[in-house]
Length: 214
Ligand code: AP5
Ligand code: ZN
Image (cartoon, rainbow, N blue to C red; front, side):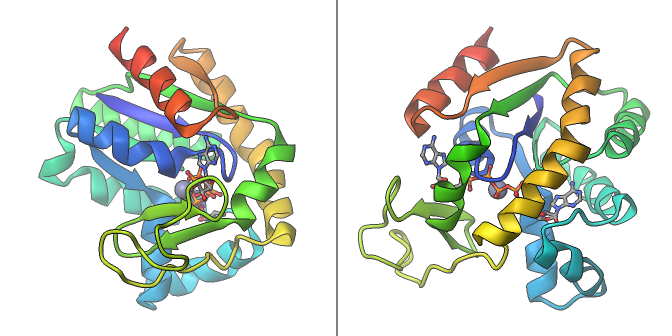
């Protein structure tokens, strides 16, 4: 399957991705995770992306399209993939269509993580992540066994630099202005499935499974 996960910051894309990935043996391509790894490693890409990310603005289309083009060529992505956080502009969606056309492939489903903005601040400010595995926790909704420590490796958890109430405001603004039109783009193609992303993680997983098995 070739899936796109679209939704505002904190809507649960990164939480559901590993579950879908394991169930359908897909590769998980999260542009945010890839960009954060590039920033941490201070690669030329990371240096270019950092300023926009810190402000909660989108990185340029050319940079992210380049990352995805490269990543989709991996043998592990040939059977199918989950795009988490891409495409985020209509230009990115058009470029993705071009890439897929070359491979004779197409997107099967776009999962729209629909949720009210008001819920997101608590989700974002309580999030803790284990950077090397991408595992995500929440102080209230998904606490680790030991506070600040990854359940599996025992390594320390960190908070994302952009997970503050102030930066969330710009991220939400970017979502409404630049990314919502992408949902319209795919609605015209009839590929969008709506999820109730305000429900519990388990309930959202059940909705995803229902959509993907139909
Ligand atoms: P990115 O990393 O993609 O961030 P985002 O879109 O803002 O999304 P998040 O990762 O914040 O949310 P999520 O939906 O994954 O939430 P999660 O499941 O973790 O992008 C970061 C930046 O990179 C962008 O601002 C931009 O600068 C740049 N960028 C990335 N892609 C780009 C692109 N294509 N073009 C241009 N720039 C790009 O959940 C959040 C918290 O809530 C967790 O703590 C979790 O435990 C908890 N939670 C999850 N689900 C539930 C639930 N159902 N109930 C209760 N709690 C829940
Ligand atoms: Zn995420």
